[in-house]
Amino acid sequence: MPQLDVSYFPPQLVWLAITFVVLYFLMARLAIPKISEVLENRQNRISSDLEEAKRLSEDADKAKADYEASLAEARSKAHGIVSELKAEMAKEQDASKAELDSKLAVQAKEAEASIQAAKETALGHVRDIAADAAKTTVGRLVDLNVSDADVSSAVEASMKGGA
Amino acid sequence: MAADQSPLAQFEIKRLVPMDVGGLDVSFTNASLFMVIAIAAITLFLTLSMRGKALVPGRMQSVAELSYEFIANMVKDNVGSEGRKYFPFIFTLFMFVLFCNLLGMIPYTFTVTSQIIVTFALAALVFIGVTLIGIIKHGFKFLTFFVPSGVPVVLLVILVPIEVISYFVRPISLSVRLFANMLAGHTLLKVFGGFVVGLGLYLGWLPLGFIVVLTGLEFLVAFLQAYVFAILSCLYLNDALHLHH
Image 1 (tube, rainbow over the protein chains, first blue to last red):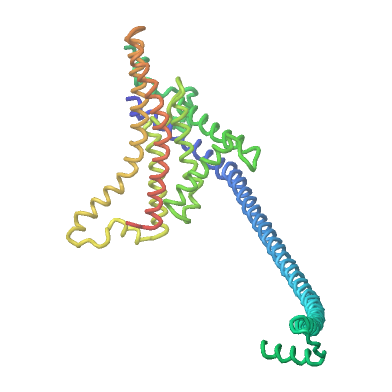
Image 2 (cartoon, each protein chain N blue to C red):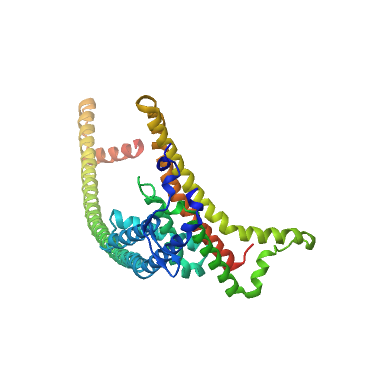
């Protein structure tokens, strides 16, 4: 196996040492700082972006809460106006109803009075008619001329008795 | 089979630029070339893809960030916050092994991680580093790492040598695992490549199909072994830092 030829060991070791040390310094001084700088920048950018997003989200939450508060206020205001209006309308309605009621009561009373009057008039007429009819009937039946006063008293008595 | 067609010929080291410093052979070999290509590729990939520093990453930048976060999470999960200091080392180790493995998947390239001396050197680096960290952090208390807690004294006579051996075997298992995986995969690909030629136009399709499947598997192994190497280094580091048992 050519790998076991000891005469080739020194040059390999020497060049391995040279190249490995050179590579170590190239990595430690050049490549690694470069990569870690980029990674760090990215990490910083991401965390600052996240912070910004958090701040904006908080702002949005606050705006939403404000909006909801003002909405609730407007709603309660509108509710107040509606109930106020309702109460006013009910009051107005009650007033007009009471007025109408009293007007109707007056009219009913008037009507009742006029009915009563008409009834009394009619009843008065009934007596006269009855007396008249009785007088005529008596005159016809017995050819007796009865005085108006007698007829009227008789009618009165019969109406009382018959009623 | 000619010598240059042997399945193991791909692992041969060739001195491209022979060099000698004070009697030490420091020739620039094909292995050295691919080590240089690997670290150049890693550096170019990571710096060019991150050039835009885009807030929303593109395709290449995503891959670069993903590899960073992959290792960062691995260190965080396995070592904890104390591991942050060692993240550049683990990251370098992972990228180096991963790119050496992946570069080896390109035909006619050289697989650096198929050299036992390379993987052993990396494993020894991890082992010695981790042991030194443990000793510096805990002093003599580090030796309690080899003494399992809540065990009868009689059993300790057996258990302590086992613990010591298993600790010192770590660099060997770590390096041989990576080396053997790369060696076996690449050798198998080469052997079946030989079958394709040997069986000719009619039967050669069968090993060719096998090679296609095996190539997919080898890409998985390339990634998986880099991952295993890095995560075991993390676990060893965690042991040294916390002396958990």
